[in-house]
Length: 235
Ligand code: 5RP
Image (cartoon, rainbow, N blue to C red):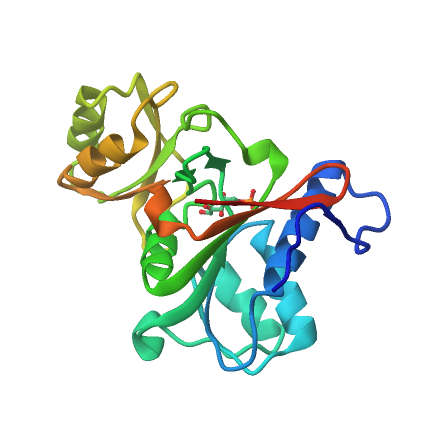
């Protein structure tokens, strides 16, 4: 299988920053997990972008589903077959980025406001593989904030409920999600128990989805470092 520890990759050219280069290395590395015959969930963001480009170059015999309109557009423009989640039903593998990864493989996602679709697609997959550059590794989730997709019916009521769970601030982004909903960011500081907070957020009426992906969803995290090496985190 791909991604041996500390592999040096040769794709990085030109004047990319170390972080951009690491995103490319992680993204391309994870594409090697995809083989002919698979049903594949494609995540959203600048790291998994490179996975999708690599798949577009190699064109394995796969069927994909996309976690956002922009991923759908990218994948189809590269000649990949993309169908709806309902059409594909179940996935062999899903690959996506993350905004934070803790040692238990709990994730913060939703920097690109796609976390609702991303969580559905990750949950459809036998294997969920996460691709990050090393700057995403944290001891505790929290500094990035927790993205929230919120129904535009009682957003202030939802925000107040989230504050009662310990958020010190809840702000609304100017743009909506692909689903037409509001997107908010809640600050909790360092989160001691992300699994517990995830369950509590899931119970807030009107909160469509939050950006905590618990570690039990994740098979492995492919991490690219600024020196070009790749390591993996598993349970
Ligand atoms: C989008 C996401 C992305 O996966 C996350 O924001 C990471 O993005 P990037 O790879 O661009 O840093 O959750 O909703």
